[in-house]
Length: 326
Image (cartoon, rainbow, N blue to C red):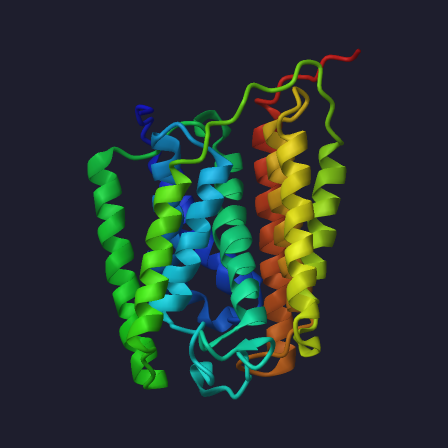
């Protein structure tokens, strides 16, 4: 178990970066509802902190955090909002489950895979990577002690319960008992499995890695491909998203073992993902408010993300040792 190096600034940063990425940068909420960040933070930020803290405390890294992010997807979308099972989520008549629908499970193949991507890679992955890059000296250590983590866990539970109650009042929908049990059991299995993943092998000697500019560009392109994959063609978009996921994970797994892989590469992946979100937001149909107000909001949030990335890059560069030239 890794001893904590308490960093309240980092905790607060991740607590609010997670809901910012998940809801505002994505384009779901406008600037006038920025105050809702405080309401959204307990569920999103609490989850991101629990994932990051539990993985770092156990001496583990991104494979564990990504699997915990997948578990969070089932908790958030299967148990709290229950959007994985709701045919008319938020009463917006979007028919999210109609694409690649699986009658036996009562879920839509496209929406399920899409949600796993959004929460695992963006809501949790991008947010944690950005926050860690802002505090590069403490990347490998927990930011809180056990008492602090317990408080965060309580905040997350309360925030998720509040989200469930608000969603129930708006949707008047509750998934079936088998669906809820399946989501709960699968999320628990993912949590347990996250800590059974073998620890990473030592990095390869004299390995090479692409420039962070290239890895960032790849993350951006792959992210855009997922976000713009049209769901209207049945199972083809589901397969396309899964292929993109596999390509991304294989590339990261290979290059992250090279000696030339640095924290700047990790930041570049988060930056690419964040920018994909920010660009995609300009093309999304506003869920509320006028199109002009939403586009102004999108521009402000994208500018904020760029500022965050620039600051994180500046701080990370100070601690990245120069790569020896062969």
